[in-house]
Length: 395
Image 1 (cartoon, rainbow, N blue to C red):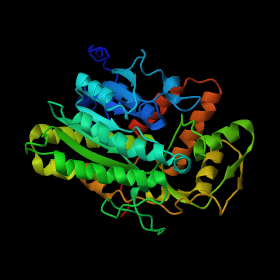
Image 2 (cartoon, one colour):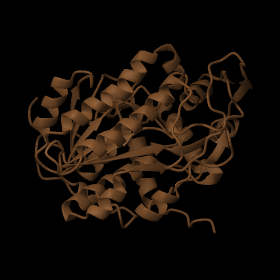
Image 3 (cartoon, helix red, strand yellow):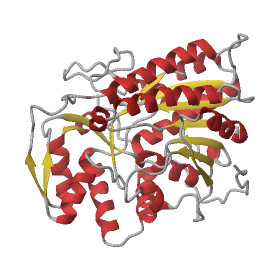
Image 4 (cartoon, helix red, strand yellow):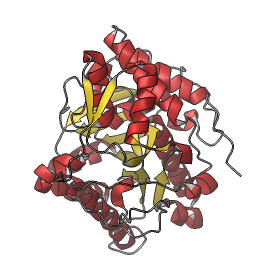
């Protein structure tokens, strides 16, 4: 693997509307991003390049056609401040992963590589647990020998909680669980990270003082560029484009819907704060930050599948039908996150409500179908998000 090009960053990044998230922090920052070829990873890779970071992406090849990562061409030119080098690598290959990490010496790591689909986890449980648990362990082991401080944000899911099918939101200290293989594998990853952090982060002879590891539990992310099968938004957009009727298997199930940029802003802020606390030797703040964090939407955006589809259809008219199947594999019915911790301790808050999120998502697909460049559509959404002010908290 050759070195990244370390050219002077072009000053094109905007000043973020949140005073706590600094674009200057990210300019020239060495960032390792696993899962950069996926939907959420592609958006984060774009944002990091926009901010001027030097990014090494480690992942398997894209598993959808079309692929947002391939459409954005992020490892090529563009008038973006940062640069990205992509290395196709399976996290199961620990020697190759260690070699990539030690050659790059990241200052920040975002771990997004995963098998992310609930329904697929029933068909491929071994792959799901191997990828989501052992892959995470391999990454932590590859990072352990790093000779300088590194802030790590490992992304899990809102489904790590033991689902009680209640109307209350889940907080970071609620019990973990997981009925299906996907949810349980992500809960296991949370337990693994907690144990690894307690065992190997510190100043004892068997520990490293250079790693600070946090986990992030996001709600159900939507947005332009998701082309996965068996997922509600891409299925809805394909149906709208073809004039077909969308089939909903669980129209009454609720989820914390949020635009993909919402949790990504939380990941960036959390990683920045982690790294700064390391540099300052602020042990108390570091202990507070190296923990689990929820990033979810406003309460009003915790809506049913049917409500989400109807919000999408407000921008791109279509039809749907109820295809509920009592014999289908189990999926959670009610799910909601409480994000008070991120609000009070990080100063983070969501910026877009469900109507705005659905409108911008549907508009992205409409514009791309009409011939617009996916990169231009993503940058338009990113810049609109950066200009949006977070709403005041509800009293």
